[in-house]
Image 1 (cartoon, helix red, strand yellow):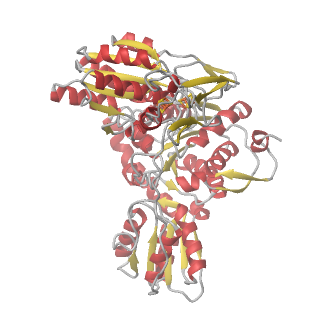
Image 2 (spheres, protein in one colour):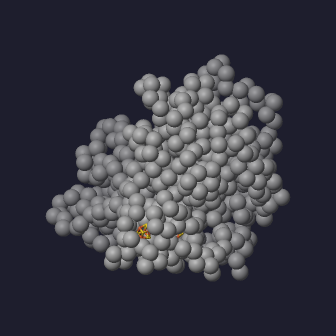
Length: 612
Ligand code: SF4
Ligand code: SF4
């Protein structure tokens, strides 16, 4: 039976699922009718499976152009009565923060869950912000699963509670919970839930003009008060007793797993309060736990979010318990935990000398894949800038595979801030310094937030050359479709929107070149860097990881090779290796793109195609 068929099975069975797949299954079991996202690791597998499952469940699914649009679409679907689900990586919520915060005021129609997947240690992100902070900012209830089974069960509960209080619920995971694989008990799939809503009758709630918002804010804080005492949330939180111990640990999410392992391996006896709801803090169970323990360690990754609340709670109770955690540096604020880090904090609390080594974060610089169109693009642009005497031009780059150009031997990213920022930052530098700048942006990022930036750059008369590195997909997160090309999900057809037509509409002078045509990239760059004003060059070539048939590979002729190592040191395709005094190509690694065979890489033309 195929994975998808199993995944959509309506019978009680157990399936080995990733946390993200379990979340998708939970949404389906809850009868979700609308789901939208902008792909981003560590949340991307939710979209991969929902896109395949949607045509079989009656759910509408879409990859929106950015997280704000995805959030607003899902909110609209909720107002129309459907249960809606919007999911994104942690920084995606920054993009969606505007509608998110106000939607807590207005409330919703059908249940609405927003998933944020945080990335401690920044495996694929520019920061590791703790999105639980948004819970306080927006007064949003937060639910945090610790494993795939909870991920599935908690999202179902989140939809129920969302409808009970007419409030969006945040489901917060971290990379390890999203990517952990474990057995999950499947339950019956509900039909798509349709709630009767009447948007027109409730316009005073949904139209957040100041006079309405002033009434809605106290209602929101009242809801949060009610939720903090609501027994319907009880099953999210539990106490695990260790008889005779007055040492307690409060924890949530993935940290609970580290605590369990550390207690077993250290032999320390401790009671655990495992919180599945981390905003608001559930009052009764937390108070009971604090009354029963004279010392409490709060174990949580990233910020001392729970700890701050627990300390305030303790102060209100008259300081009955000694609270320890990150604020007194027992645990670090940065990077992912390991069992060793948690074990050391527990041993310290127990007054035991520790010899446990904490796992080190290993940094392996990532690189472009064999056959990646970005390699020949950056190699050629770098050469062209050098030939034009423009090597010191400020290079403003963006979020996507092409950010790998930061590394040796390309060194083609001086600034990377956030999605879509390359054009705005480059324009700001150009206007403030009076110097020409270069900006790099990918096709998906162009649609995400580059279009508004390029309109602003045009109206600001920025003196900038923009390279749109179009690999025809959202590559870094799993080859999701961009709006540029037509595609379909079930019967739903999406039309393609050409990047060239958008640039023409804005009035930006532009040209298009092939990513593997190094000569043309060099010529076009030299010509454009000399012009003043705003110009865009679209460099188009498909991502090497998109499905395609390999029809040839390339090999180095040892008799012709001069041993200059330009292909190894400067072009840097992983398939090309040094073999004594000559270069050699691994035929299995080689993708057959042919970029290394051009004279700009191999000046003696020693690299030849071998047809398969
Ligand atoms: S660039 Fe050509 S000549 Fe130089 S090492 Fe590579 S294959 Fe040999
Ligand atoms: S043809 Fe050359 S550049 Fe392309 S994948 Fe093969 S070795 Fe790498």
